[in-house]
Amino acid sequence: MSYDFNADDIFEIAVQLERNGAAFYRDAAGSVEDEDVKAFLLEFAAMEDEHEKTFINLRNELTAAEKAPTVFDPNNEAALYLKALADTRVFFKKEIDTSTVEGIFKSAVTAEKDSIIFYLGMKDLVPESHGKGRMDAIIKEEMGHIKVLSQKLATLKQ
Image 1 (cartoon, rainbow, N blue to C red):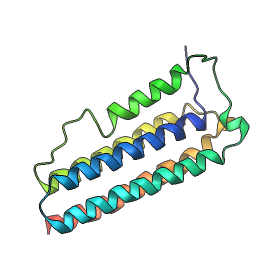
Image 2: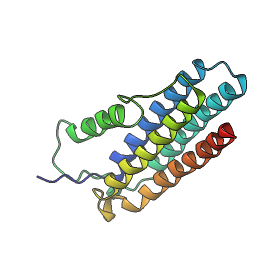
Image 3: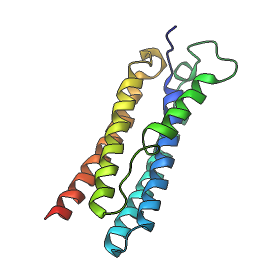
């Protein structure tokens, strides 16, 4: 049996991923001594908080068709499945090296890449009539994360 998801389902997961990301960056900030790095990580956590708000706003702008269920799911199992994926596959349940600043940034870049892969895969499961085009907004935000983190990682290696 194949499942289709709607944009509303995916935006709900995007919100959860941003929350998980913000927690990751705050925890990482607590493990470093360098005040500049700590400030950067806390700033990045705040960016994740802003992205969460962006996704909430985008979710609120969805049409009824984009929120319409694509399958009969009286127990909301599809959303629970997606939440479990968000909680285990991107920022958690991984080997995350917080022993070095470089390790933190490499782990963060990897997590952001994994989130893009997750969204690209989910995009294929969202029919056009249920908001498939809106998935690009999520992917673009995550690509921006990678750019900023990669630039910071490059400056650490110099």
